[in-house]
Length: 111
Length: 111
Image (cartoon, rainbow over the protein chains, first blue to last red):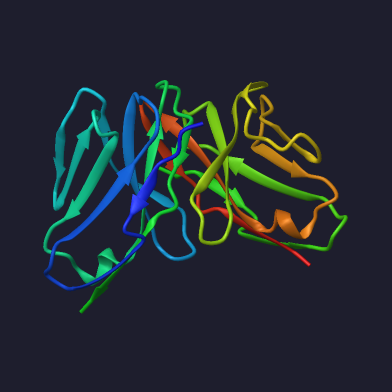
């Protein structure tokens, strides 16, 4: 089964800087989603990008998808301390909502 | 609007005991997904259910694990004769269109 893989795994930045993280996957997908997880909590859906889309924005988030390279990136602009969390990409291969998650990126935003 | 609810939030069991994890999807949602998250890992799909029906259980271990979603009441993930390797966070999710909404998780510790 396919699996998202994020890179880098850990990122420490100053408040106000941008944070970029990448995700690669192995097989074709219907859509790719990014989630945030605060320590010890559940996952919060951030953004979904479909296989026929190349870029999507939501507030301070920008997601790109390159299906030829089977990769996606998540950019958080003007980071805040509250953005400190783990970020996971998840792929949906068949549009059946069965998600395959990567191992996650730990992002620490230093005030 | 109540979100996805899970209980208990924390569960401690001794080896050989049974663990029962409960999940109530968001109001109006009739599909539930269960995922397991091992420490420092992403979520792994376990099972997908709708009311009174298992749609996809391809991620469930073959032994000791079972899931149900009765017509009335919450979905139950049941782990019999728990072992230390079952220690993990177990999340359930329900979905609307392509977006999955996750519960806060149940953290199972097997002593």
